[in-house]
Length: 434
Length: 162
Image (cartoon, rainbow over all chains, first blue to last red; front, side, top):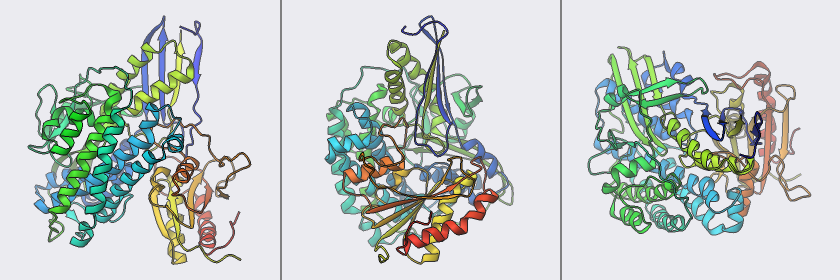
């Protein structure tokens, strides 16, 4: 230890923030041992759950889309799935395909953003993406090109790239015409090539040799890599309906955090997101993505959290390839939405947001008024596991100075791409030593 | 007097569910409607979403609620130009964010890959209440018409208003 008894180490962060003070990490060290790690991430869903009560069931997709600026489609898709479950409606196959295409757009833009602008600088010794652009302009341009293609898919299908407006319970307000969707073919083919180059680029990074002891939870969708539909499954053999999973994933309030922490059966922390999806579904990746994973040295699974960037790159190849296949097979749904009539009951929807499993559960009355809402985002599900990762990192890095320890902690958090950006733009770290 | 810029984008940063943080998107939308030209971007939760949306614009106006200790409702316009040290105002290089980088960082990034707008002007509206909920505080609500006029002037080729 480099710090004496009773000394408080506070590592301040001068983040550029509009809404401050909502992401923090506090570490306690006693006699050279980490005794407590408390990651506090502000979570808007708690507020939105209350806001939704009393609103009409058809409003849920647009209201919840505003929870996250990076993954609005995920919120729309889980909300639609839950409401359609509550109302006993199955949507048209063509609507399902169009939803999957829209969701691919979100995966593409979100993964490209995280890989190139937020995570890669960690591995290349760059302070941020600006420095990376100065050193390797071609790489950043490639990332921005991929992101732009994701935005293009979202604006073509969803009406606009940020907060799509074309989604409704039952389907879409309007189906894009064939020509508009066909115009996505060339950009997506280029993006798939760029995504393959991304896997090659990222596989050359130096990864710390760390293996996490993870309990993975992800959707499974027979024969397909899961995105907008599937059954929750775990690396320990659970195979559940969305409603069964909602019952099993118990959220608890912890004193240090405004967020709820989820555990399976009230007991076990778990991890959702790319590592979990890949561990449970690598075998159903399309050949181009599967072969890219194999060439990058990934087996059927990966438990090194620092290699999540590599798995995310493989998923980027998958999302581009899948979007391309959906574009080739596109048939405009007619009508663009199934009519959904409310009935009293409870509905559950689970989909795979870019950063992990997102669950919505609603109770509605006969008029379609929302009586109860529950939203369980990936970040609250992953929070306990991220804390465990941080504990390991801090234990190994107690001899580091403040700046280096802070950097290591932030990198550890970034491995799991938590959705802090909804409300907070910085992570304030303090280490208390006694 | 310069003529109006050819391609204008107006971005609204912020969330309508954080009270005064919703001022940016509201003003951006109203200004473009009133001016009858320009493209609205947003509401944006993260300045990184400007990448790909504002590329190669002649003018990008970014409207955002700010918190600087001034009287709520006060308007501030800042043109993001390089200072004597080559640095943009409003941001240091390193960022500890787990997700986003600030507006100045995003502009530097866009410039590094030659995809930046020619001019970027930030219109800031001093906020009062950034708590959870919808609706602007009275002071910010009262400032909205002036903020809209300020953005419309910029769209039409005028000088920054404050």
